[in-house]
Amino acid sequence: MVTFKTWALLSLSQLLVPASLVKADNPIVQSLYTTDPAPIIHDGRVWVFTGHDEDGADYYDMRDWQLYSSADMANWQHHGSPAGLQTFPWASRDAWAGQVIQRNGKFYFYVPVVDGASGAMSIGVGVSENIAGPYEDAIGGPLLVNGEIDPTVFIDDDEQAYMYWGNPNLWYVKLNEDMVSYSGDLVQVELTAEGFGSREGNPDRPYQYEEGPWLYKRGDIYYMIYAANCCPENIQYSTGPSATGPWTYRGIIMETEGTSITNHPGIIDYNGTSYFFYHNSALPGGGSFARSVAVESFAYNEDGTIPKIAMTTEGPEQVGTLDPYVRQEAETIAWSVGIETEVCSEGGMDVGFIHNGDYIKVKGVAFGDGPSTFTASVASETQGGSIELRLGSETGTLIGTCEVPGTGGWQTWMTVECPISDATGTNDLYFRFRGGDGFLFNFDWWKFE
Ligand code: FUB
Image (cartoon, rainbow, N blue to C red; front, side, top):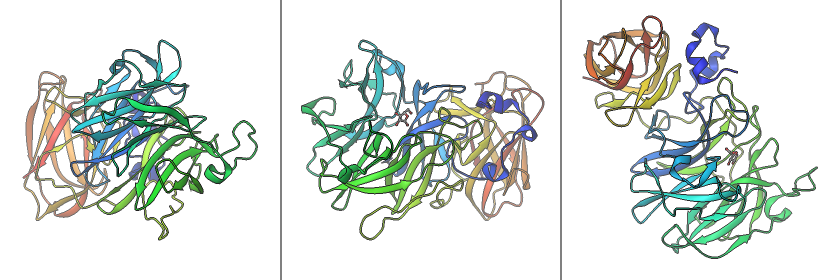
């Protein structure tokens, strides 16, 4: 199996990656296996909380969540891990599918984790004043323990918050205004053929609903989107006139594809376009325990129903362009090969574990009349190397080469500069890393002038 560690060590010619996959922008993250997307709009950006499949796992071995954001749906910035099992000291394992929601100036992170005391799946709540965390355990124990997973939280127009969750059942509870306690009983939704469709060939699970609910409202319609028909799962949905139904089954949104037996939905509207997040097995080494988050745009039908959405390797169109004349983080990436991201001593993240031949693609960079200089913040404990700046592809037109010296440490940062020529208009920019054997240098941010 090609894990990311071994992938980074292979030369590009050894990789059996189809050219079409290397060129494409789905999945949105290439340096980790990511799962169970939970998108949220904040501060003019789309933020996606994901799960994280450990390299080499043979089960859903998941220990932390990861966070990415984008202002253009094409270039995604990694914000690191906002929370993990260590956030919930009472949890023993399984940092599975969570969702963050904002209320009262705070962000609440609802997660399924195994409660160490009972050994049963439970729902915990993290809280943070910043979307990127770090999140702290809001309660000091589980919000509830009933052996089921996958919380989704929705605040209705009357300010009542609902949390749904469950596999194999579907449950909801009314959250209190504090978002960390609830009132009333846990309500088990009655699954019926009218509400959730019939499933053939599985007498234990006669209805389509399986797990991963995602609840939201658009116009007057409440949507319940979910993973269904396991296994393998596809994505289906039901609609209703209220946050508690009654639900009417509406059918399949996304068919099964690839080798992951799970899928997991998240839907948002951003800048007038609707986006459907999901996961699949599309990266090298991908499978049921090595999944990757991807996104597609879609348009609702006039009656509010959702069209069938196919998995693509292209993803949605970029919204606008990327400005190269302001500082951009090196971990803002449309596609990468070989590199990884890590926590940076200067704050945020940097790109590290760079080898000769690795590259990063940044999509839709608006150069305008053309810059004359490129500046980058870099660090290297060893020999350094160089950054080739190319347009259109990793072997495309060379517009400049920046030499990177040894700086005395992997977190000993300095800026390097190099002249740029022939970069006009809007282009995909590629940073192609060159040097000797082993790790070359780390890369924190860049800017053109
Ligand atoms: O990622 C672990 C579990 O797999 C999630 O909680 C489910 O929704 C399924 O995607």
